[in-house]
Amino acid sequence: MEQHKVKEAKELGSLLLDVGVSLLSSGASCSRIRITMRRLATAYQYDAHISIAPKSISLTLNIEDEHVIFNGMRSTPSQGVNFKTISGISRLSWEAVEEDLSIQQVRDKLTALLALPHYPRIIILLFVSLAGAGFCFSFGGKLPEMFIAFGATFCGLFVRQEAIKRKFNPYFCVFFGSLVASLFAGAFIKAGLNISFEHAFATSVLFLIPGVPLINSFTDLIDGNILNGIVRGVNALMFSMAIAFGLLVAMIIYNLN
Figure 1 (cartoon, one colour):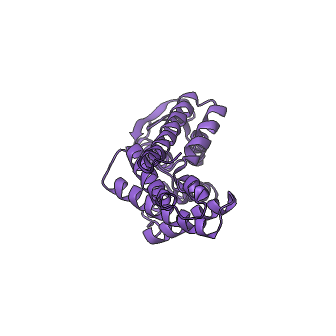
Figure 2 (cartoon, rainbow, N blue to C red):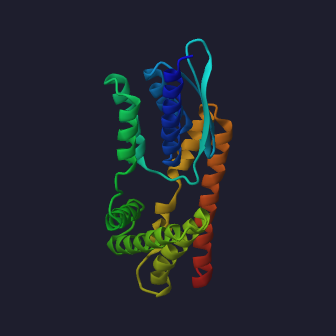
């Protein structure tokens, strides 16, 4: 076998593993990860055999005669949600196919994509808080409740972000965020004001709902990725329990029925 082919396969295999791990850590479903990795492998005339575990990806590259030319595995320490990375890698895979990019060009574009800065923290806090106020309005809350939901979401998300920065367990980060948000909203109920604040209290923790893990769990189960679907479903259940415990502790502190 040509030495050039072996070197190319190693470069492509390393690139594909980086792509897969980036998608996995950004909250992509197993089917999207497989489709994107195989699209890139096919662009360079390789057959990719991919195995996706909850926190790792294994890859085998074959050439036309079914000879194994690359074997590798990569793991990811943490997972979150980053739609910018998911959509950017998807576009990059199509560029590689349609524009006949070299492996190094794809590598450079991937590095630039992963280096893109996140939105400023204050922008995230403000817009997520506005979404919380919008949820409160959707559930029947009036203007005072919307302001309370805004403040509760802002404080809860701020505390969760701080807990993540200090590398707390992800479930404790959600618990702290839920507790602070519900304590903020519950304080207005406990103050005895002649205004109904139940809608604000109920919607103050909606920013913590694990929507993406729940959707991915369902799609993985439908696609036959049973292990990953179960793991993601249990993970979402644990986050939901952390939210519930935060609300429960706040209700106990304020003695709310």
